[in-house]
Image (tube, rainbow, N blue to C red; front, side, top):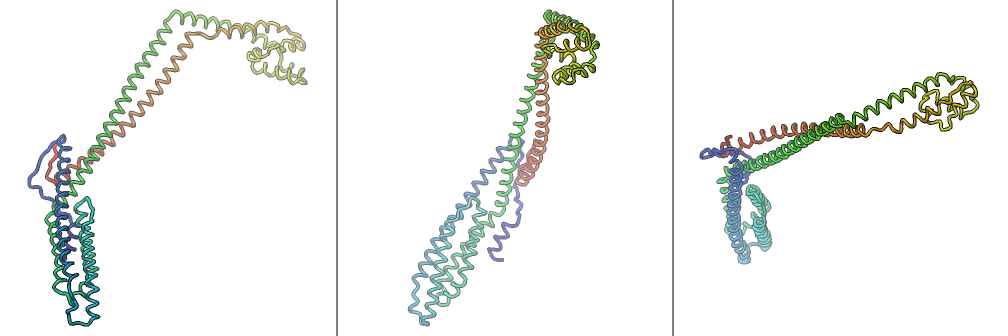
Length: 390
């Protein structure tokens, strides 16, 4: 198996890390341990990248020497056809150009993760071996020893990098696990922050309900106080007197209404649309029509066509209007206003209670998610040799 195949297999296979000993921590110690794992993982990553960069720098120096040796190789002293020497020189130049490009490309690699760094390195080496194969074969026709030395530098570099990757294969798996631990830990923190936000929201809504209840009780007490006051009792008495007076007026109006034959009136005045409309209004709603009839034309029509005396309607109208103007009672208006406030408070409280229900459902979903995340986190940490207790 070639080193390129080995490195490919290295990153494809899973290597379970083996913890030398189990470390036990509590939930309260979890954030600090995750941070320590992340810091250790970062330190290892930086150390490994530094080691690889140093080997790349060494390769640049070695290939630089090899390129200089190849470029100074003198083909003029070789007893070969000029055409052959020309072909060899062309491929020698092409090979040295590709070798120089390899060194420059390796030095330019910028990858945060050492695993990606290694993949890029082997990709570039693999590409170099492919494109340089034919120029190498053609150039070695006359330049064998020097070409082999140059190629060996690349192969030693690849073997050294392969060995570095092999030595760290367990650490690569630990790094992946640590990244997953850090990701789950972040999810756990986010869930806890969201849960805290929901708790605060529920607490705020509960406080709001308490304040609404206090306002509700205060208003009910105020209504009770008003109803027990002398002013309210006087208003109730006024209202009862008003209702009695109103009942008396309505009784008198009802007597007059029965005396009038509206169908007969309608037949007499059907040619006069205005009078016909007044008659219809009285027939449908006598009280409202009486209040609306400014000139009391009904008296004239009833007396002229039916020979009845309904002149008392003038007095009844005046009494009705006068009675309506004194119907407003201050205490009842206050109670009505306070009752409206009670309804608004009850509606607001119902909304807050509904919001608490929704927030509680959200809290339950977050709790389940947090439990699942914590379970996955514990499993990953166990693979890294960390046992999380309560």
